[in-house]
Image (cartoon, rainbow, N blue to C red; front, side):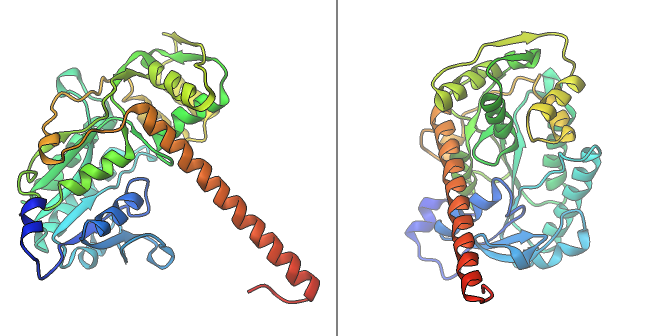
Length: 336
């Protein structure tokens, strides 16, 4: 392993080969181009390589099918494990089996570092099934001998992220809220741009191998504070929010599924974790990857701006398709 500074001083004859699992996902689709920009040779693992349009060389692989892992992992130096099964009621078993299979395949094929995104939370406080599963995956990924670098985070703020989408849609759709008691739990959100920066920074860094890091933005907020701040950025004012003690986790998940587009199973698995305080207590990641993380307000602004740009691009594409169809109709030609 070499640190970024030492590798920059010595010319390399071969680029480090990196595999990104979940390359089409919320973080993976941002991570792959960032790794390319940093000089890595990127392979993007996906279940749909024929339709993959992101960065890196697409290759078929499915962590739930151990027989498919040899091809994507062959010749790889560093593997990013960026998958989970939160939309399943049996996610703990599925994630454990997938992590164990990936660990064994990575060890057999000579991978020298696995990087994993876990979840913050103090085990002494009692972890939810979701967070407990994340800790189990950390251990299983390393049980075959490949050193694992873990980055533990709370809510990641960025367009397309499930937790952020819950926040955005609540703010967008409700002028006032009667909210579950977990809205008073403290958390430490982090911008997806900073998550990607940290993920890239620990790759092939000798001081990051076999270590667990906690990552977060500069702001520690309860969920009420997050909702209010997001509303201020999006609408210019904060909504009235009244926490009530009577909404159980099950009822909370129905409430979120009713108000937002997030399915009930994913909502339930996330809600179970929202009663656990998730804040950064160890800041050693800054010794490895220097730089100040973005504020929550700036992370919200960027997430909203990306969503607006995506909507504008989609509208422009639809308009162009409609114009092409109209032209072909008037000439009797079939559009290409």
